[in-house]
Image 1: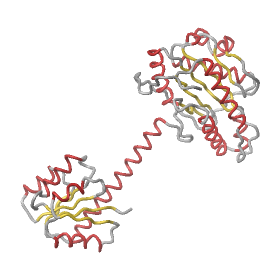
Image 2 (image 1 turned 60 degrees about the vertical axis):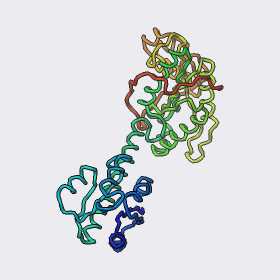
Image 3 (image 1 turned 120 degrees about the vertical axis):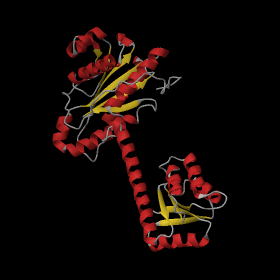
Image 4 (image 1 turned 90 degrees about the vertical axis):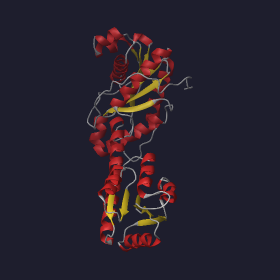
Length: 359
């Protein structure tokens, strides 16, 4: 990667000397020049410069004033500035570092010393960029599933709690649909875990294509997904759940030799059935999913029970009323990697949608 170095000096001889030293060292750099600080400042602030090497004593705008002007516009660590001077007094050196100089070189200096100090700043720049990328990656991983790129369990619950608060304030409906790939343990046994991971990723993509942009699809863990459906009432939740089941049933998985894959979905709607919290809503959707599984899988069911039924446990909840939508398969397998944790963020209107989007 080519870096850009801006050389600032009122002496053309000095600028040429610094340029030659950098070029002869074989550094991958592009060199720009300016004859004083006033000429250099707009170039330094353009975003095209990686390092500034500036003399201190110059007309119009000297090196320390240039440095202060740069620091007033950009973060102190964002643009390395090396000051060069023949002044040997300690005050100039102190003023330079107080103003935010990255390094300081006394004239006369050898070409090797200049090159070494520039190389140090280039290495620091690379390390800062790597750190920035790593921080961004960990930030994303904190809210997204590494395998599928979907929202993870923690982020799903954060968004669901925010949406619940918004729905309560504005008297909107909201729904949660939880989907699980049927008989996935058998699929893993037949095709292996690597192919199993590919199937999970592909199904996530299939489901995402059948949701609105305002909906949030997440991977709760293993082969289980959850869809957060803002401003979605019971009838729309039923339609979305059916569409998710049908989308997976109709999708071809030619590269995986899996046979026919099916999906079971359980959904619940706030405030239907007296559900008043995210935990109750998710538990109701899970109970509906259990009902779909107990009927053989490959179907969608909708919760129509009560919070009291949820309080007495999953079996009672199933009896209390997920509506059966079809027939047959077995229990959930958590063999593939899972996400853990649930957030508890403050309520806000950050994701507010003023009008219900047509399903």
